[in-house]
Length: 171
Image (cartoon, rainbow, N blue to C red; front, side, top):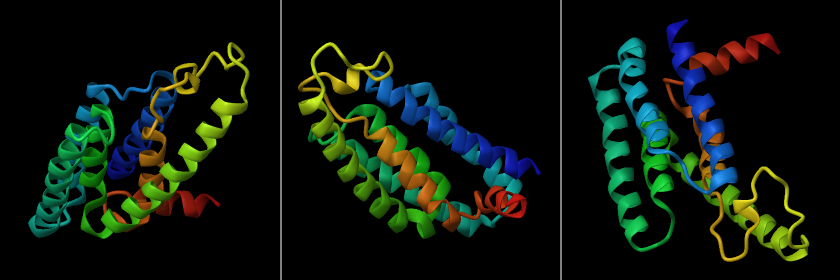
């Protein structure tokens, strides 16, 4: 039951990161910090074994190093560079490739949609929510793609399957 609550918090933080990124084009440090921090008690409760927990930590550390490098190359923002490793901690090695593929596909679709919307939407008509996203020469809220990738790869994570099985029982 408690692992279900940790998994629900993971998904809630992912959704919030996507929404706040649409609105402000930033993902707050506190959100990434809590997402990473909550991995520790979730791993303790799940008790997958030191080998599994260690691999999750290794995947998160590798994702952090790669993300920081891509941030310094200007590929994406600092919030995204911290959001990806925090998500990868939870997904672990089994979810890494599905996450990366789903995130890349969602990011490509998101970019195309935003570029089209920016070109056809008259200036000054943008919605109140997400004004920053629709300004010219701004970035793309890649937190949306990262959250989508997390949802798609979640079934591969032993920390998230408890909640997913509860949801399947309800349907």
